[in-house]
Length: 223
Figure (cartoon, rainbow, N blue to C red):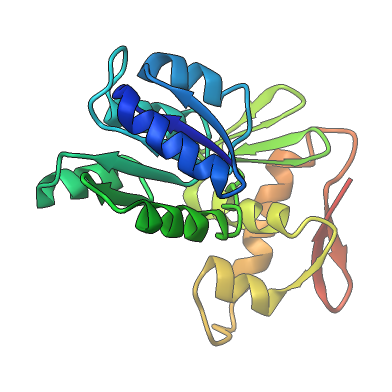
């Protein structure tokens, strides 16, 4: 594994660094939180070890900054701050584990190895794209060909489901269950009505249709 150790106490940093190297890992060691934030944005690490009391940028702020920048690397806090509230604060800031000083190196190594075995976190998409249609799930906005499209909440949910299943055929039953949470057929034209309204907004004003009817089955969204 490649490990980043962010620790301003040189004795502790050297001890951890040497032990990890002897265990076969590649180690980068830094003493400043702000430098660590910049370095982690340039180099890919398998695990990051962070002290809470750091110059430049404290450990909590460093971890929050890493998470805000999209870093999903597992992070272990290694610190003398050991209150229950402090541990909770560290984990809620984005840390994955918390080890209190003084510590046994064998335990630190075991925890880092466990974090390193975790499968990579799946990054959730915040924008869905089909051809020139974009759906921003965070801002709850929709655009096609750089034109803003106003959608009602149910229309937004319907379009999101269709876009997440791009090029797949989705049935009326699937739409009723996933968009309306109906696990029975209400014997209404609710799906057809909303599809028609959606088409009027995202297809009709443009040259190419994106929502296609698959006869006797359902709908498919593709360019």
